Image (cartoon, rainbow, N blue to C red):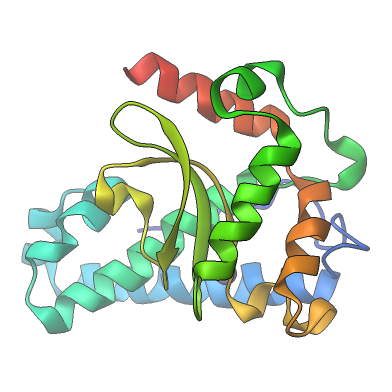
Length: 204
Ligand code: MN
């Protein structure tokens, strides 16, 4: 049984950049939807679920081997669950954030440069998806995925992402996705992102 992880902060913690209403709908309704559809799949198809393995990373990586009608259920809902789980963890109240870590600057580049690369990549992502900072085979780079596809499906390790679905910004920013990216940048939890960075370094 998969469960929606607790946010670790209040629904209104990201205000004024992201509203409590958006956070509630996003976490308690949309993320909950991914998890309950994933649990329903596991319950209805125990053999396929066993074949996928029990970890979410395995599930998204192995989903490509399923029949198309099942493949998309797992790809979208396990992907939605894993992406949002990272997302909540790498956000925090703007008052709880810290400076962009020196370690990230050394490995990935200056904060302002990274932000511009993220803007440029997000602009290229037509429709729904995510923009990510990932570790590929040998380096960190900025990329994006469509829908709820996870960088893990491409054997990339996601350091952090920004949700580009309209459900994450439309109430506050309308069609101005750039303004939302600038705003949510104030809520990035660099401490938590740095610990994900350290985890990736240990894996190599
Ligand atoms: Mn979302």
